[in-house]
Length: 219
Image 1 (cartoon, rainbow, N blue to C red):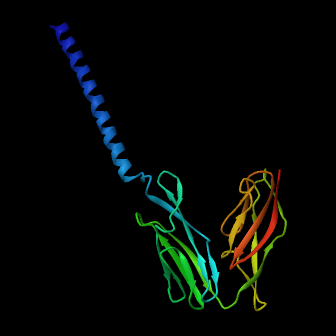
Image 2 (tube, helix red, strand yellow; image 1 turned 60 degrees about the vertical axis):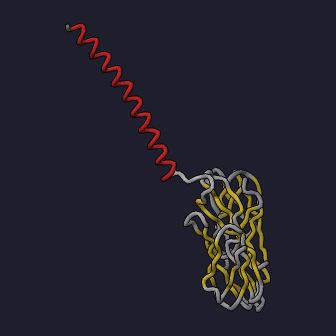
Image 3 (cartoon, rainbow, N blue to C red; image 1 turned 180 degrees about the vertical axis):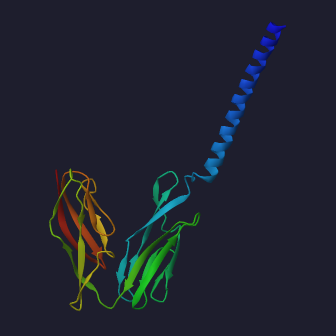
């Protein structure tokens, strides 16, 4: 009897083990399914939007075309300029059409917003409408160097000269670019970071004017 009970006990245990494995497998599948629907965005869902340019400087009646680039759930990117909803606040200063074309209306500042149609993701860009035009842009410091091994960064400043002879700091409103991002990158506020040894051209643009300087990354 002892041997019989032992055999039956072992068999029951094996059955319970198999049932347990099946139950775990089903539970895991259900959890993954739940996570996929609730936590991981689909490959067509927009998770982030960036606007180009990051800001604009217009005179009344002039225009600026904005472009919207989306990052999707699978980390790919694509142009969604005609697929987002564009708005301007206030529209009495600058208006925007369904294709992202902004028009200056009256003197002042406005905010352009692009909102995805399949999520709540938005991106914004400031627009300045002025009677003055920007005739030139100067970047300082000029031709600096930073060390890669020390992970040094360089903050640039952009100064605009206007058509009436006045000047103004446009560091946070200009669009910053690096000619070679594999050597150095630059943020939207003019902060450059080293990536590899070499030289790049750092540029700041706004209102149709462009200023540039060189940046050298040393060891």
